[in-house]
Image (cartoon, rainbow, N blue to C red):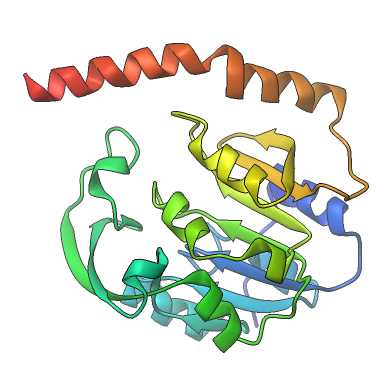
Length: 232
């Protein structure tokens, strides 16, 4: 019998967004089958989808504990499609960009992993155009993943993107795909197509303004100071 994990607050919000109808998800950086998953709670409700996880041990655990199809690859930009690159590993966390991992994260190893664009994985996995939910959490490599993703071809109903908002590059990349931001929850931005009916709630509007604009100059200064200290 599958283990039951109560959904956290963000997962409850995701369920409310989609309602009771099962759909199709894609999770880039799937990580743990249950505890760290953005999609296990949906799978429990009858959803299907694709799980993308480059760490071999985590990919094996996903295959053993989840029904969704698992791709043991890292997603990146089209220039590296089909290559083998170095994945920096810090416990359950990993990234193709060591310098972009969260402050305080110290990699304890590195492994070679196959690389694909997200477009290629979606095509090989049979993802339907207009699928429901795309979650991207790849420890600082999100821009490269987005560069290998044709949003106008796939048109997911909701994109959940991890973004510490060190700058506006990720936000602008998703906006250029024809999506708009409707919610900020912890480190995740929620994006829907421009013509989607969902609107920004008043509480979410303040959090978006605070995180993406008011506090951004201070984070830029903080990061510049950190970089200077590293050079010293």
